[in-house]
Amino acid sequence: MRRIFSFQGMLASVLLILAVLTVRGRFDDPDLWWNLKTGEVIWTTHSIPVTDLFSYSTNHHAWVPHEWLAQLVIYGAYKFGGYSGLEFLLCALTAILLWAGYLLCTLYSGNSKVGFVGALILWMFATVGLSIRAQLIGYIFFVVELLIIQLGRTRSPRWFYWLPPLFAVWINCHASFILGLVIGGVLWATSFIHLEAGAMISSDWEPQRRRALLIALALSGAALFVNPVGMQQILYPVDTLLHMPLLVGNVAEYAPLNMTEGRGIGLLAILLISFLLLAMRKSTMYWDELIFLVIGTWMAVSHMRMLFVFGILAAPVLSRQLASQWDAYAAATDRPGLNAAFMAIALVVAYLGFPSKSNLDQQVEDGSPVKALAFVRDHHLPGPMMNDHVYGGYLMWAAPEYPVFIDGRTDVFEWAGVLREFGEWATLQTAPGALLDKYNVQFCILTRESPMIQVLPLLPNWKVAYEDSNSAVIERVSR
Image (cartoon, rainbow, N blue to C red; front, top):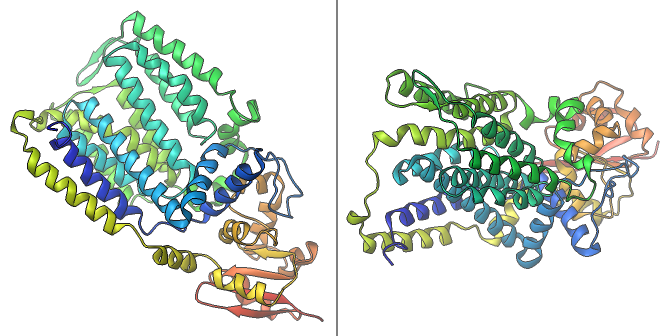
């Protein structure tokens, strides 16, 4: 009982509260819906789609189902609990991420108090991507990989052999598996180095431990072939960065980091503290840690969404550096009664903080074209439909009778050439009516921010049929 109601358990309950309160208003992510719809298809048909089934513009173009297992989990949560089941999944995954980060930082630093600080660092940068998406599951696997490697390098090397089954699941959940292989390779390469250069140090590993990691990484590479499409799925993350310039250059979360916003300032603060500790001789840094910080910083500065990765890599490094500056936890001074009381309060707060069904419905209505779709159905508007990019996922889920023009699966639309067409149309680089005539579009569902809301009604054969605070329906009329 003392171990259950320990100081560490109390800190874990704080992270539970933090998880619930952070994501309670993050339900209606645009990418939730197409993930949910894909999961439904897999659940009901018992098959994994390898072509586009949901849009009319791509003409069933080939598609890489690189997140199919995560999508199945997402739909399973909906199947058994509706919107509340999805929100519970989001709260649970966020809590698991923070708990795993706390455990990693505690094991890496040897100090549970500093480990809690590391979990808060991870949380700060993870807020860039905490939503019901496959990437959250992928980054949990990334933290678990670092945990396994830490246990393998400090305890038994047999821990390394948990990596192959981890990667066999990981590749079917999210493309971040490639980062896991890179980090594992960096650790193996630096395991040969024995070097000291001021505050920078590196200790080589025992040959047996190094050999076990190499075998585990080789088996992990082989485990990647446990996927529906083979090599194409393994190469998907590389193909995204190298051969999808429209996706990388135009999707907001792939934009470079704004160093003046909160998380950008936080990144600079983490690096400054880390290197000040080195300069003041208050801590040391291992060469593999330096490489991790360089990789994480480069990725985060290049693409804002990669702040998540920076947090995972930087949190344990700074935790270890701070460990000697803070007294470690002493079990003898623990007060289980107070810890138990606080943990009970934390459970109550988490329960009360969980959003109601009506709150979740309101979040969907505020962020998606719920009323606009109701108008389309009530007036039996004929398709085909043009829709804004951010609405595609919801329309795919809520209105399967209207195939979408585009949605959040930006990869397949870039491969098919549709993303370029839509981008030029949405930014008025082409004649407003040309694309609509090409696809014989009969009505558009657009966000209030779309320039086309102002432009299309000026054309002789288009009119605003419906509008509300977040969306509008523009209908083709007879000449």
